[in-house]
Amino acid sequence: MAHYIAVIDWALQPGEDFLAGRYSRRHSLAFDGGVEIAASASPHVVPAPWSAADAVDPEEMLVAAIADCHMLSFLHVARDAGLVVTAYQDRAEGVMRKNPEGRIAVTRVTLRPVIAFDGGCPAPDVLEQLHHRAHETCYIANSVRTEIVVEAP
Image 1 (cartoon, helix red, strand yellow):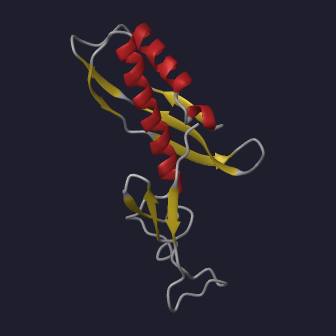
Image 2 (cartoon, rainbow, N blue to C red):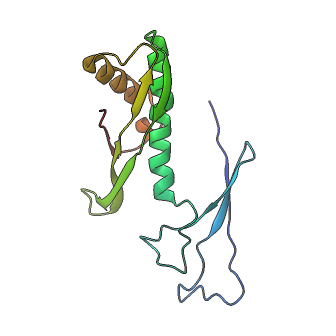
C-alpha cells in the first residue's frame, strides 16, 4: 500500500474579513519530494482579488492529474506493446457543471494527446486500444467519477 502526502498552508492575513468572505484564497501546497506550488481557488469560482489567477487551482490540478496519469499509463502500455514513444503532448480540458445529483463537479475531462513514435504512428485501431488499456490502468481514472474522453488525432 502506498501513501501520499500533500501539505496545505493557508493563513488569514491582517486586514482581511473572514466572515464577510473578503480574504485571500492564496495558499501553498507542498509535496513529499520537496516541490512547493502556489495555489488558490479558481478565479471562475472566487473572483479577484480573493483568488489568484497566477496560482494553480483544484480544478486544474484534477485535470492535470487525470491527464498526467493517462500519459504515464500510456507510456507503460506502449512499451509493453513494443512501441517506442519519443514525445507526448496533451492539452487536456476539464468542464465543470452540475452532475446528475445537481452538485457542481468536474463532469468531463477531454484528453487530446499528440504522440510521436519511433518508426511512425501505429494504426488507429491499435492506438485506440492502447488508450483504452491506459485508461483502464490509470489509478486516477479509477478513482474519479468524471467522464474521461480521449480525442486522439
